[in-house]
Structure formats: structure tokens, C-alpha cells
Image (cartoon, rainbow, N blue to C red; front, side, top):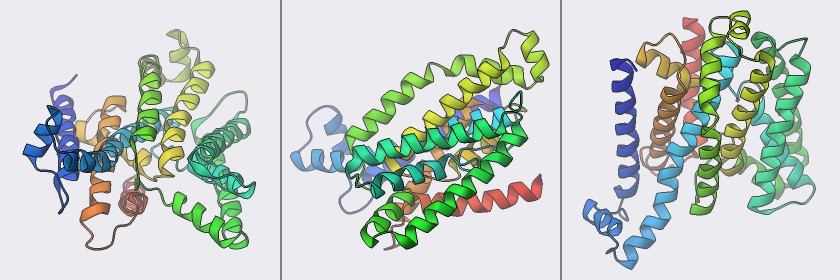
Length: 322
């Protein structure tokens, strides 16, 4: 690892730890450093344990979910060889939203039903994009164009539902669709973390394939990479990384889009980095959630609104630059 990349990674870790610490301690009901120390050694009061159990899941979910989105983003951008090739651009978030809407339309309720609907919706959207984009191979630019088209179709259905559905169902879908970490608890955080750790075991072979793809598909094939099989594996892993976050927190836009490119520019590395993208994604979402909670006065918007605002500015800059 280059010295600059190592310095950037350590800086991102410092930002993440700082954001988690501030999230636990800021505000009238926050914990002091001494309170946190007592809790870690098992001597905290009942009040401190209650506050910790209330705040810690959200404080930890932001970097964990951000890292998952960053990894998904770098996989799809490497696959498409395009800075716009992120899950939120090619329709996975719209698919998850549609899946949740379908669950609500058939009378489903509760966290489990919504999570299943989001995951299935993301997978179906990804399959649709893959089928329509495949022409004897999977070209990156074609994948993006087909993904934008599928996303537009799904978004049209989602908007139709919002004006035709029962008001309560429409409000439930809209709240979930905003992308929020409000009310995060240990159970969904533990589930996402466990699945992400299992998926992390696949990132070694994927990183090798990503580096080989940078030399061209023919060269990658001559190096022993099964090109189409590896592309399908990258799609599956990227979809699952996005789906597990979307199922729990809703579609949090632009983290997947921005994290790989920010990491690439910070490290000045010509290649996309899985580790760098994960750390930058974790830092971006941690900062965004902290902003949503405490830096906008009495207004506390969902973190998805903050990332959309920051991501929109980034997207304009990226389009002008590229």
C-alpha cells in the first residue's frame, strides 16, 4: 500500500471514530467520556446503559451501512468502468422501493415484510437490468443506460402508487423511501453486520478480478479470469451489499456514487480501491447522519435527505469535470 493511501485510510478511520464518539456524547442526554469508560468496563449506571442502548445502534449503523454502500459502489463502477455506474443510478434503489410498495399493497406490515420486499425488489431490478443489457456479454455503458431506463420505469410506478394509494400506505412508503436511521436497534444492525462480514470473504477474489479488468477483458481472460462468470458474481455481491442496507434503512442515495471516486482522488490512485471506498463511504454516511441529527437546528431530516443534497452537488461537479 502506498504511503498516501495508508494516510488517507487512517484519516478516514479517525473521522469515523470521532463521529461515533460525538454521536454518543453530544446533546443534553449524551454520555460523557467518563460514562462511556464506565460502561465499557461494566460499571455504568442504569441510566447510562439506557442512553447507550438508545444511541449506539444508530451511531454504529452509519459507518457500517456507509461501508456496505461504498463497497457496492466500487464494485459496480469497476464493472461498468464508469463513475456513474452506482446502484442508485442503475435502478437498485428504485427496485427496492417498488418491492416495499408491493408488500404494502398486498397488506404486508412489520419490519420483516418490508425488509423482504426491499431485498426482493432490488434483486428483481438487478435481474431485469442484467437480462436487458446482456448481448453475448455485459458491456458497462449498456448496463448503465439500461439501468437508467429500468429505474425510470420503476420510479413512474412508485409515483403512481403515491397518488393512488391509501393515505396511510402512501405515508409509510414515503417515510421508508426517504432513507433514515431513526429508530435503529441492535437487531437489524447485527443482521446487516453479520451478512456484510460473510460477503467480505468474497472481496479478495473480486479485487483481483477488478485489477485484471483494468487491463481489458481479453487480457483478464488470458490471466485466468472467467470474465462473464466473474461479472455475474460482482453483480450478485454488489446487489446484496446494497439490498441489506436498503432493507433496514431505506434507499440512502449517492453514498455508493460518491465514495469510490472520492477515495480515488484522495489517494491519487489510478485504480478504484475496495478498502478506500468502504472507509470513505463509512465516513460520508457518519458525517451525514451527524449533520441530520444535530447541525440543522430544530429540524431533523432523514439522513437520505442530507446525502441527496451533498450527492447532488457532487454529481454536478463530476459531470462538469468529466
